[in-house]
Image (cartoon, rainbow, N blue to C red):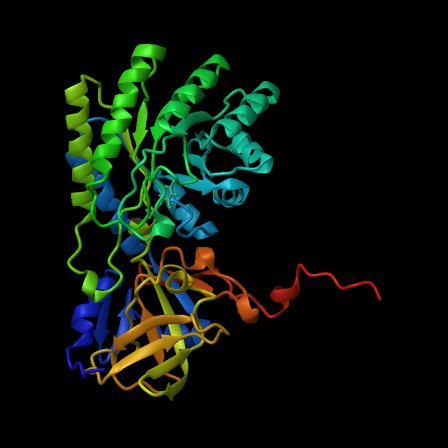
Amino acid sequence: MGVNTNNLAATRLPLFPLNTQIKDGRLLIGGFSVEELAQEFGTPLYLYDQSTLDDALAQYRAALQAEYPAQSGLTYAGKAFLSLAMAQWAARRGLMIDCTGAGEITIAVAAGAMPEQLLVHGVSKSWEDLQAAVAHAGTLVVDHLGELERLIELNKNSSRLNFPDLWLRLRPGMAVETHSYTQTGQDDSKFGLSALEFLQALEKAQKAGLRVTGLHFHQGSHFHDPTPIAPALDLALDLIVETRQSLGWMPQTLCPGGGWGTPYHEDDLPHQTIGEYVRFVAQHLMQGCRERNLPLPRLHLEPGRSMVARAGVAVYRVEAVKRTATRRWLLLDGGMADNPRPALYRARYTALPVSQPERPATDAAWLAGPYCESGDVLIEALPLPEIYPGELLAVPVSGAYQLSMASNYNGARRPAVIWLKGGKVTLIRQRESLEDLYRRDLPLPS
Ligand SMILES: Cc1ncc(COP(=O)(O)O)c(C=O)c1O
């Protein structure tokens, strides 16, 4: 690998939380020395910076207000990262929280989210998931006809006066451009209803006296080009023209899901902004409604990654440095157990040394975890300076789909998580203990 003497910090700092800086050769986030945080809370360590979350939310709200003249709303997609603190953040800011099933509903309710803030998703919701949704949620997104049958049955037996509003999830038959594992809108996707099934579901729900208030679709996650949303919106609006004629139904809310991408690596910069994405959706929706003489529905977006990814940073300690035939390996104390994304999707990340982040690079390094899989490589061929065992590396854009997919592989204890806000640091999730690893296990009889 060639020598890269670029100033690494200049290109990588824009990926870190907003108030990240280098002072006296040390990486500071929210005014805190990352090295001191690692000493206090141990590594691997995940930190979330609230001001970066607040900023992403403000970008969404400002863009919706500027670009869309009718009502609009936002749901935080909890699947990106949900904890008590994260759900409190969302609930206190008046967001809806997208919960997949009974588990995430339980967390959001414990965090104080009100029923009208709970939006329940899921491709194969169990009876337990549906019962939890009916007990707690204001809105449920119906994925398929069998689920609707179950809901009709639950409605018959429900003592709750306010049975959740239903949104029907359309499978538009076109995905966005992203890794195939995170495409969801294509014809053969496991998610959602075809246009024909949508009409059948709507009629069935209406006959059963259920309130259907929304049309939803989601074409995939981590896309950078919003163009494929346009034909999906057209399809949805054509369907609405048909439902208005045949069933007298129009949605109060139209939700084209979430999925807006985030830059993870310096090569991903510059990246279109949240505002540009929202403008594209809003303009196309307004034009589509105008052309079909439809009133503007409430526009609802459902971001996860673009809300939370940049706010999160993972901090690892280098346990060993190894040289093989062509590679310099930095062997870390975390990897695929806390961040399975590179192994799952070949996701690309970058990193900075926590002390001396401005040192020029020598040659490329492969950053790997301690787990017994050759696929446990967090970052490939990353220009970095000389790094020694015991030093720390910070990986930006670690806030989404890392901890929410973390495992105990090889007896890994899932990391501690801290929250930085206004010069205060709060531990929001304890590191798992050794005993936690077998707390649910029971011995064999003797
Ligand atoms: C239905 C639905 N909505 C929203 C999201 C959030 O996607 P992202 O975190 O990429 O914004 C997802 C994630 O796949 C999803 O499945």
